Length: 208
Image (cartoon, rainbow, N blue to C red; front, side, top):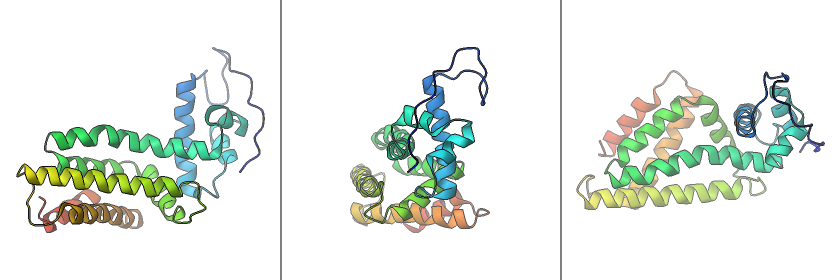
């Protein structure tokens, strides 16, 4: 990890810095998160440094530390940014009987955010190592996703929205494996349509 250096003096409104006019704390954090996504997606978490993130914004590593505390905390913030959006929409979709439609939206969103999708694929592979700082995060994430999927599928099966032919737990694992697998294929073959391939998989699973 880069050695922390003292945070720079607070910017003064109206004074133009390396990246333009004064930014509020919220705006600056958003900029740092976007830059971190780009750096970690390109270099991986271990190879990507706070110095790389800071340099892309015309900042010092100390400025990143000022906003996020450490490289590990920056990583957690990046991961939470994506998961928070899904966590907010998923339960509501299940309540309305729109589980499969919500999954389609997630696949489409991933297809429109190549940098973030690349980051997740890269980090998921790195985090297989128990020593990786995101190892426990990804274990917990997969457990939560499987649980939410299984509960949502079972609820929609009971409502007659989804067919009863297969156990909810098996369908949940099949859906998650499909989404992860198509994501990797799409990153290797950008010309393919991940959304079209997902729709075909849904038909194969008798879910569309």
